[in-house]
Length: 550
Image (tube, rainbow, N blue to C red; front, side, top):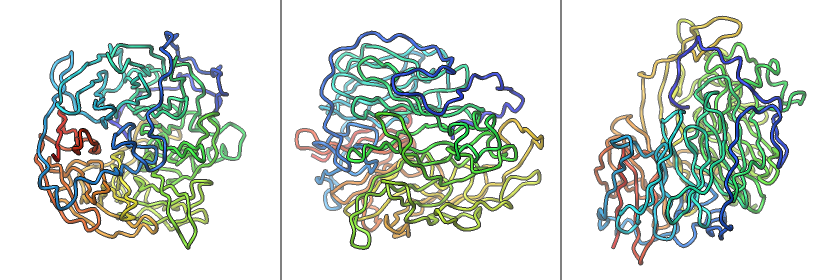
C-alpha cells in the first residue's frame, strides 16, 4: 500500500481509536482525540468549475483528479489522432525545487483550470502557466512529520485550491496568490496517519481520505466545509459494533484496529448522489490468523451518500485479505447497454488480479473474472466474490502466490474509453513467496514476502462488459508503472518502464509515438486545450513535461 514498516515490536495498543463507525453530520466524534485547528473565515464561495457531469470534461480542461467525476480519464479532445500525433512536440518543462533543496518526485495529477496548472509534492503546491511553464506561485507547508512517500494532487473550487499535507492537514489556498486561507486537521500523525490523497469536491463537501503506514489504526473518509474547513462528517472503514457486518471480525478489538486506509481519490455519480471509493488492506498485514472472517470494510468498494456520510452499499473484492491486496484502485463509472438495457455500472481492475463490473445503484456483481495471472482462489461465491484458497496464505517456509505483493494493478489510474468500450489497466503477471515470521496468537508486524520473483508488465485492454482481454502490449521489462489517459481522438497515452511517454492507437494497441523523459511517468498523463491547441502533460521524476500539437 505504501512504504512498508517492519517495526514488529512497536506496540500501538495505546492508540485512541473510535468506537463508532459513523460520525453524525455536523458533529464531532466523542472518541476522537485528534486536536483540530479552528479555521479562519474564508472568502465568499465562488462558482464550482463545471466538471460535475459523469463522463464529461468541461471545455477540454482537467479540473479534478481523474479529469471528471467518472474516473474514466477520457478526454473529449480530438486534435491529437493517430494521423496527427507525429506532430506532437515538446512545449516546455518545469522542474520542482523546494525549500529543503533539490527535486521531489511528482506523484500528483496536475489540474488545469483557466490556463493554469496546479500540482503538488509533499508539503508544496505550485501554480504554473499551462502555456509557458512559468511559475506563478509556490506554497510551502511547514510540516511537523508524517510520511513523505508522495502526494497525489489538489482539488480546485472557485477561488480556492485544496490539498492534504503529510502531517494530516487539509489546507485551503487562494487560487490567485497561493496564500493560505485556512487549514483543518484531518488526522493525527502521532497515530501514524498521514495525508497523500487528492481531495475531491462534491457539492459543498471537500472529500478527503487518509493514509497509514500499516499499523493497527482504522481508515476513514471525511467531508469538510469548503469555506471554513469545518468537519461535516467522518465515516470509518469498519462496521458499527453489534451490526451483522461486525461479525466478519472475531471481536470488536480486532475490528477497531483493522486498517482499511482510503488513500486514493474516489468517483461520484451526481444523479445517484453516491461517492465511490476503495479501501485498503486489513491489519495485521499478511498474517490473518488473529482476524478470521471477511474483515469488512477492508479491501472493499464502498458507496456513500456524500451529504450524510452514510454507507449505501458495499462490495468486497478481497475478503479476508492476507496478501496486502487493497481495493483502492479507481472505481470507474461506466454507462452502457447490456442485454438491450441501459445500465449504470462501476468497474474496478483490482489489485488481486480480478476485474469486477458492478451495478452502481446497489453494488451487485455482474462480472467477476481474472484479468491477470492468479492462483489464490477456489472460485467465486454467490455474490461474485473470489473465495480465498487456505493453501495460499503465508507460511513459515513460504508460499508461492500470484499476483505478487505489488498486485496485478496498484494505485496508478486506469482509463475507460466509451468510443472503444475498452477498460485499460497497467497489468502485472507476477509472483511472490509469502512468509510468516510471527506465530503468536496476536501477531504484530507485517509478516513478509520476497519481491524479486517472476514479473511481467503489460498495458492491457479489457472488454469493459466482460473483462476479457482484447489486446495486450507487453513491456520489455517490468520496471515502473504508470497511469493511463485516453482521448476522443482515438489515442491512449501512458508511460513505459523505460522512461518514455508512449502514444498508442486506443482501438488496436499499435504504438504510434514516444518521447524519452527523465524517468518513469509517475501518475497518469493529462490533456487540455488552450488557444485552439491540444496539450499533453506528464510528470516524470521531479519534472513536468508539456507537449503540444500546434
